[in-house]
Length: 477
Image 1 (cartoon, rainbow, N blue to C red):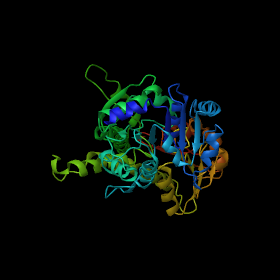
Image 2: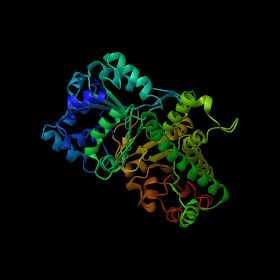
Image 3: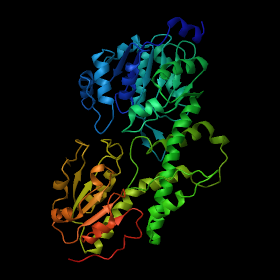
Image 4: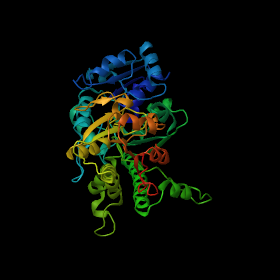
């Protein structure tokens, strides 16, 4: 019996399992459960000390994700009330489902040696392999090194199940394409890349995702092409950010405003002219952009090193971009130290307020936040550091305040690190009074503050890309 015949005998997809209750798995599970096409969705979550609390919350219809996620909590309440969604730590229920997706983080053990950490993903694959039945569709949604679906994932599933991919079960890669703050909208509206290991696998995965797409469409391709598509699109975004960050550094050095230059560049429109000008900033965080370049680099090293034609002894453009973006927190630190020198302030004992611990505006997502290496540099210089964030409540080893005034009181410097809406209309006169300093410092990493207003209040101002203002005269009294 062929895989297609086996799937046809099994019938349409009715029960779905989603492994990994995070930023990808929760909204995906909720949307599957909301579809009239599907009968039941299980969200699989380990009952661990760090994340087991999600099980009870989700089964009450409560969203464990902080920050603004329009429609998600309401959707969860509905599908739980309708008994179409259940979160469970019992992975044996995988035997009941027709399709199972894995949405598990895939960080790197060593970016220098291109060694990914697939331990969590492997654990999920072992659970699937131990429990799945013939005819099951397995889909990897995690961003992975090209070659992983047909290599490591296939091997684990076949060994643990005793079944053969492409004969006894379907296997595909359909990478997530979501951003925190718009999870439901992204899943519904973005085109879905679906890469099966063969035709029947691609068709079955298309059947799974089509019901939750409103404007988006399915784009079929091979599993490896899908892996490259996901890693490359994040790599290109990282490259675009690095390009504007480097331009910002150039503009600072030349004493001009990067935002003027950006507006000028963006003004040229016409046929054949395409640009994607992003915005400079204090650094790039998150789970994806900070490591997907290395997945792409590892993929070409594993799958195509002997055939790669590339300029001899030249570094990867993509890895260089990654290094530029990793440098931006260090540049924020240098701006802070320069501002301190302007007023003769020693770093040791200086009180610094970091505004924003999440890496993304109006979000609680702290994964690989650039605020952390910046804080570490300050602490190494003997600074006292307070952190404010309106969305982040807990972070291991760190006290975070939700009150801005408490955070900036008696501080020498205020550092805007995230683009949260709360930082857009800061009152420089009030911040100066709270600080109690004649010349407080403000370092703007997200172009949130009007430099002229702060300078007029006696602040020492420095901002990313603001070469026109970073050397301003200090206003006295």
